Amino acid sequence: MSSLLDSLFDEEEKRPLTISELNEQVKGELERRFSSVWIEGEILDFFDAHSGHWYFSLHDGDSQIKAACYKGTNWRIRFKPFDGLQVRVRGKLSLYAPRGEYQILVESLEPVGEGALKVAFEQIKLKLGKDRLFDEEFKRPLPYLPKRVGVVTSPNGAAFHDILNVLSRRTKTVSIVLIPTRVQGETAPEEIRDAVILANEFNKKANEKDKIDVLIVGRGGGSTEDLWAFNEERLARTIFASDIPVISAVGHEIDYSITDFVADVRAATPSAAAEIVAEREDDIETFINEKTQDLFQTIEYKLLHSRSCLQELTLSNIFSDFPQRIKDWKYELEDVDERIADALEDKLSQQTKILDKLTKRLSPVKLASNLGNKKTRLAVLEEKSISAIKDKISKSDESLKVEMASLDALSPLSVLNRGYSITQNEDGEILRDAENIAKDDILKIRLANGNVKARVIEKE
Image (tube, rainbow, N blue to C red; front, side, top):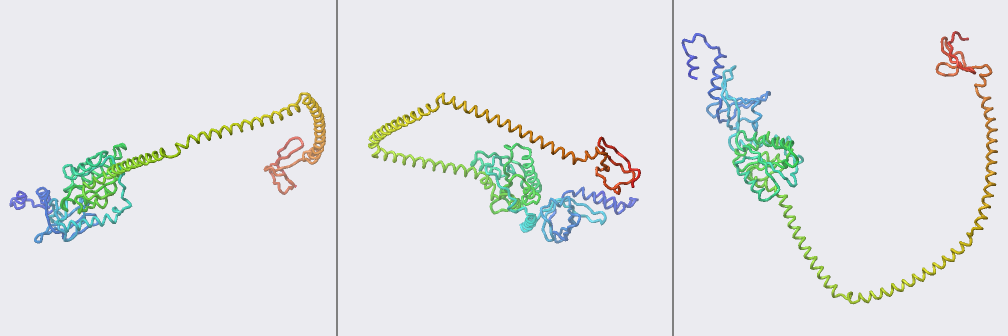
């Protein structure tokens, strides 16, 4: 900087600088010397340009500086600034050459103080609420018995160890996949978002048994600023678009973040998130244990009841009366057996008599006589049938000849034999009037023997 200023006031310098050259040199020196600075102040004259760029001033009560936050940068900022908001800005100093004004080009902007953070939080919540990211109808159900649980958090934080301890203690079938990321700081929101995207991309390529069934996204407790990474709009939209159901577990029970509203399930703490994942298996195990106890009690009751019934039976009169009943049934069966034998013998005698009568009626002499009579009668009927058929054929022939003669007399072909002909036009229509014929028409003429085509030369 001193060399630049010395050159500006060097009396021996012969060629003066143009204003543009001067501004460019000052701009280059500013950007080199102040490439990354942090400043804190209150926003003044905030302007959201149609181009998407933000322009405003920062002041501390005594001084102020122009600031510009371009569209390519401000999309990463988690809220929209406004006048009067106290903010902390990181950027580089530069100079706007056309007006010779120096300014700070904003690369990062964060609200300062609990009140400012609350305002920014409400801005994001309102915007995402209007886009229906919090609607219950879009909440995905958690799998009934998840096998693989993805955990998006810091590997060094207490949250991961709490989740690991709960799942190891309460379930034996769930495996844990850690997707490590920062959970605090300027780059944390993008890292968490990338982790959620990575988990979904992994599921698209993985086998069914290796897929992640549910994601836990969160961290342990901290101040509002510490938890601010989970209030980022792009992270919220990524969680909403995730194909894997997401449990948000950020901070303590009293802490709420944007991810809590957009996630499918909100857990008060990371440990509570692990409890939600494990509770189904734990409930099933409890249910099985309870039903096992109920089953043992039922079996014991049935055994006692059966013993009691058996004892009653042993003391019952049935065991003394039963042998006598067997004897009575034996006598009854013997009596029934005798009656059945007598009935069968009577029936057999009757059938034998009937058979004898039929045998006499069907003697060979009678059968031969009947057969001769039937043959004679059949021969007579055969002669009569043949005679009737011949007579019918003769009458039909005569009738046919008469009909053929009548048909032949009526046929137009017989007229042709007398020298007449049939004339038709090319469409096959029979012509009866010369008015329907024109000169040069082609006519078809049918004679008694053969057909002729003719052209009309003249008509009368």
